[in-house]
Length: 250
Image (cartoon, rainbow, N blue to C red; front, side):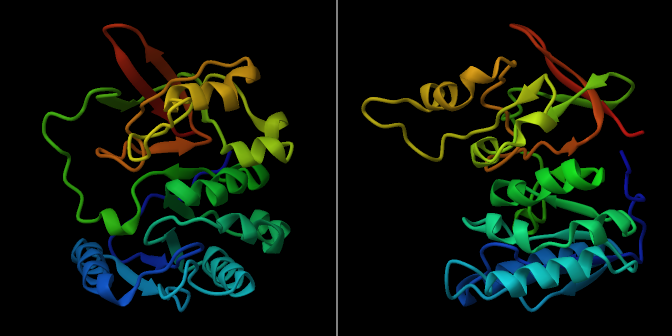
């Protein structure tokens, strides 16, 4: 596993939307997020694939090309999307995986539809990625009284930890790349149906894998957007009175 270098003031951070862009009504919110990152000393480079008029920021070929350009530019140290969307999966066959493996490792951060990008990126290139908050979640402040699980995150040696890829990956034969224990993250922003609760839906999709499943982890869509490093080693403890994830890089 290869880990990108830690970010330092003055580093360039690329912003592109591999899935959904930002419509005009939310551009002011995007500007606030960008200024917040710049105030921390980073240079922000915003790509051209950011249009929010439709459900995607640009045609798939253009989104893939811009993502490739950022990930293979040695001056860009991290890439973050504004948020997720629905069709980032369209980019996977258009990315040059050999070029990505040969490039200097770059941090890629995001959740929701971005897991469609960061999961195969880690699996196929050996470069760690971060399942963490998107740019539009910036400036970030930890909410009070909501840290119900995984309150403690430290860096120390442990056992292998990976997150469960989206079910669409399982259908495409990605099972061979996964190791247990694994974490499934889903939230309460989508109601269950009359005959199927969210927990039942998760068990229906993943229960046959024969691996541990930890539900209701606040690592996406809901605060505190717990960051999890895909590819890092870690130790996961989930008991009646203790919930803890300990990860180490290297």
